[in-house]
Image (cartoon, rainbow, N blue to C red; front, side, top):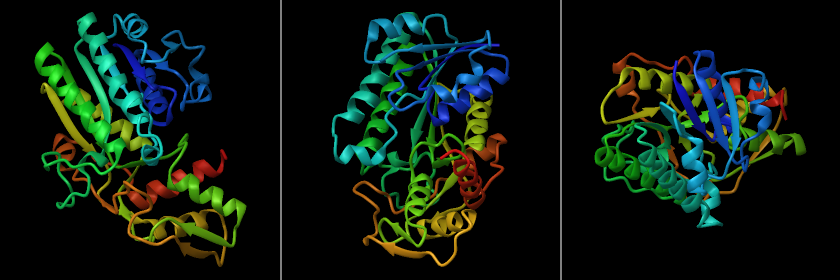
Amino acid sequence: MHKIIVTGGAGFIGSHVVDKLLTGGNEVTVIDNLSSGKMEFLEHHIPDKNFKFVKLDMLELEKLTHAIKGADFIYHLAANPDVRLGAQNTKVHLEQNIIVTYNLLEAMRMNKQQNIVFTSTSTVYGEASIIPTPENYGPLVPISLYGASKLACEALITSYCHTFDMRSWIFRFANIVGERGTHGIIIDFINKLRKNPETLEILGDGQQRKSYIHVSDCVDAILFAVENSHEMANIFNIGSNDTINSTGIGELIVKEMGLKDVKFTYTGGKRGWKGDVPKMLLSIEKLQQLGWKPNNNSKSSVSAATRSTLGKI
């Protein structure tokens, strides 16, 4: 049993991490300012004596330092997850991703805490020329402010680990989908089709081809890697072994919703928005060699996520 802090634990992926950690018998404290997270994702844990919730803005360093004291592990998922937002608000990922991560590392340093688990992103790779993209690919040239902020966080974490004898587990995610998802292509398509079940507008040319993984596989991979890797900085991709394009996702969602004769329209261009990477597939060979493999591929992940989302929105 460990005492664990989960920052951003009221969010989509964070709340699933909390579920799994509590099931494993750990004491879990969630720190979240509820700017994008939802308390309803955690309500079922409130009676659990091993669960605690602290509403806190991580830009407040002194309060943060006190809140994390005594924890064995810190799972750092707090971030602004909206990749597209950076093109409209250039400050949001600086503050909510980079500064928040710096504050957490400073709080850990002052408390002499050693273990940090960090959720990064495939967008740190930018438009990679090697696909599937391995963890040692470089140079890393992100094309979104979100990707840049996550890469900056990775650099801060590994440098703090080296300088202050910490250990880190850094996970670069493909597209994570599933129950409690709050944004992304699946929710976007469902909302559009509910407004107009005859036509679906798809951003770009519909050929953007990416890897998707179900949140249950993602959380299993995180906990498996933390248990089985012991370097100073452990960096892993998490994804599936295949891809699906935007049009294919549209077809799956139309089928799950029981619709017929839906016309697809496209906004044009190879990107859905500024900073969109048209093709992404991560190599998960490193994790597989450690002994982990996903239960779902991209198609089954999207289908399962669509079914769970349709039941909620």
